[in-house]
Image 1 (cartoon, rainbow, N blue to C red):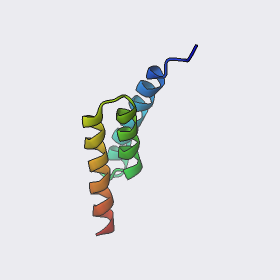
Image 2: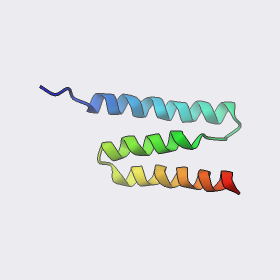
Image 3: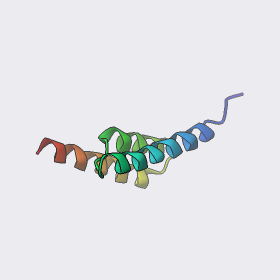
Length: 68
């Protein structure tokens, strides 16, 4: 029997969102792109494609901003 990976996805999402909150507080609002990308990955794996795209777009926006 396969383990129910939904629990792990939910837990991962919870920790990534907490990570973003901590980053905002400790870096004056600067967020690491990887956090948004990872959150997008979790939403994608949960078949929530709309939310995944939102976080992927935010990661892309931050990446472009860091290049400028």
